[in-house]
Amino acid sequence: MPKEMLPILTKPLIQYGVEEAMEAGLDTMAIITGRGKRAIEDHFDISYELEEQIKGGTKERLLSEIRSIINHCTFSYTRQTVSCLIEVKLHL
Image 1 (spheres, rainbow, N blue to C red):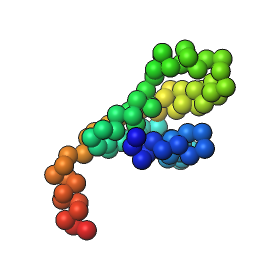
Image 2: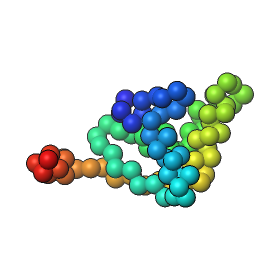
Image 3: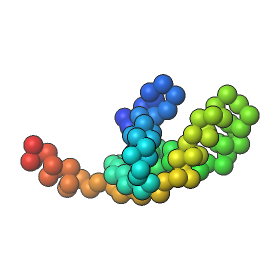
Image 4: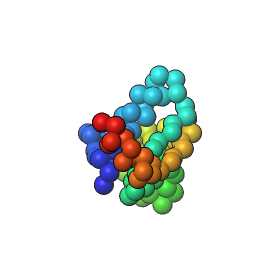
């Protein structure tokens, strides 16, 4: 699990950042990911199968929160290349 997806109370860490950006008036989110971080993209995408399982359950409120984010924001993702990682480390 990517560290950005670690749960803090009832939602992943990255969701707090997205919600804060929304409160500041932003509606376009650009997220740079790395290898093995598809969970971040999946979190901010619609999963009809998961929604069907959650409907009527105790987590339906959480579903409506993430659905509101998905409907309000546009997300784009790009993968950071290894060469960029090496370059950043060399400059530190």
